[in-house]
Image (cartoon, one colour):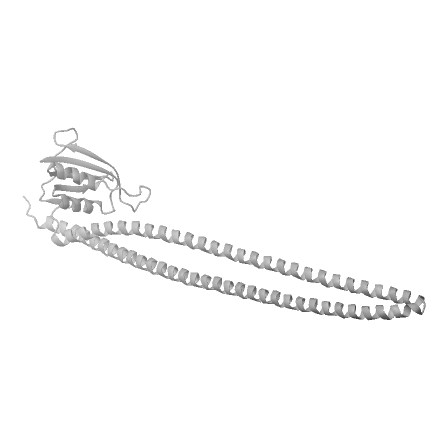
Length: 327
């Protein structure tokens, strides 16, 4: 069995720390007292087995955020064991583990009110920490949504680049068809020019040449028929090739349109998911706000009750002094 006097420093007043100390004392089976000191620290007197006291000391060294005035945070704990410098016996008698509120002869209702107020402080400090954690999660979700939107924008830009590439290919096909048509026109003009020259030379020849001209004319007619047939075949092939090109362009346009429809659907689904996420965030924020409002109302009622008790105590004390017999 050991006894120790503890001085706890940090943000330990007004945040329900004494209630937490009493809770850990009950958990580890130690006895003693706890009270606030005027310098902002908390004094604890504890007795119990060495193992229980050490577990108790480790548990009450709570760490929070020292820069946050609403966060329970222990900077250090001075431990003065019995028989060492700085040790003093308990400042009053105790049963089990008690909270010393600095008021003598508390009535049951008054003690219950003060304990409720301490629990409210501890609960409020915990709600503040949860609210900060929830707010950090919401910020992380918003960052993730922004990243997803950036990815969708990148995909849309890639689709646009693909469309521009198709347009360039179509322009190249049109250029090739134009060149082919121009070459055909030049070839036809050359053939016509050769025929005119030949006809002029034939006129200048003698009548004996007429038979040759007739033969040549017949050959030319046959050749012309062959040329026409070749031109008709070439034209037919060009029509077929143009039809195939049109079909490929139509299939490509359909594929692009389907891909754009898919992208729009994904963006629409993403917008629905974002709306759901924002609705859930709003519900959680409303729930946290409602809980904070209820906590503030409970604290307000507790403070009002405490002030009322203090006023009653102030008014009843002079009356009790007047009623005491004078010596």
